[in-house]
Amino acid sequence: MREPLFLKPYFQEKIWGGQKLHDIYGYQIPSAHTGECWAISAHPHGPARVENGPYKGLTLDQVWEKHRAVFGNASGAVFPLLTKILDAKEDLSVQVHPDDAYAKEHEGELGKTECWYVLAAEEGAQMYYGHHAKSKEELAQMIEEEKWDKLLRKIPVKAGDFLYVPAGTIHAIGKGIMVLETQQSSDTTYRLYDFDRIDQTTGKKRELHLEDSINVTNVPHVDPKLEIKTSKQGAKKVTCFVKTDFFAVYKWELTGSATFERGKAPYTLVSVLEGDGQLEVSGRTYELKRGMHFILPNDVTSWTLAGNMMLIASEPGEKA
Image 1: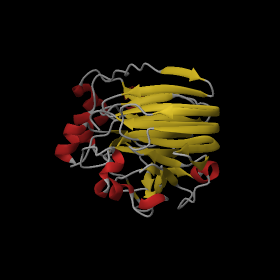
Image 2: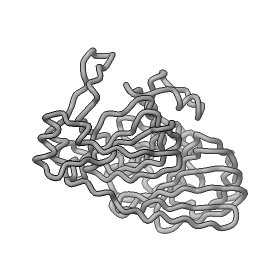
Image 3: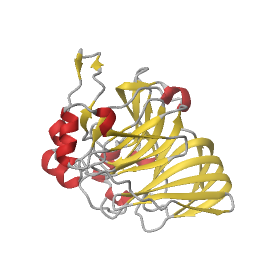
């Protein structure tokens, strides 16, 4: 297959969601409390659907299952990555995700290492990222005593920031922040604090998962060391944010026309987040605009982008 797979996202309503997914990207969202756009997803809780080519109408998980050659005959029971855009009108719950081993044993799916590229942030916006406990015992005690101000670590963020969130990291996207999230394809979340909010649909507080949260949290918290590298060649500037066993994530900035060559990865996920332009593959041109998402399959080894755009791209890592 020598053409991109353009995808129609799946949307998730959330207690903390807003309507920026409509206001900024023009998506037809289900309500004014839409928190998540599952843009490139084969997860059963929200699969994206192919909008073009021979697989038009199929969900991404169906293409993965029935047409594995599209992905270079990659191994793995499930498509390993998930790309989202999140709109946090309010704080998300304070949460933590398990690694592969714990998730497989307890949830029957992949673990969840993820990362965020900050698309927008209101003045003074903060992320919850990490904690101050020195031991599991201290962590459990501070949770039991609800010493959230002492336990939780907050960091200021602005548009253009990048955060890597390995499994086991306590975190929450803060109010007024919008991110592009690249993660393992998992929907396992353990909540340890939800600001005592009441879910309007149930009239009750949302469920917490304190035992699992304590079990999987990394103690003490240590910020991962990233070696962010940027290179510029002609009309393109490429920033590599992270390369891990799970995924590699890049920012592509275009001010003109530039050709890209794929490396060893079997396929590439791409989201257009600013501007508009064109994608040329095998002599055919596709119009691109902000809010579009696509996969460059295995048979597409080179492509040309033209225009004034910012895109986030990702590739599966060796463990994916």
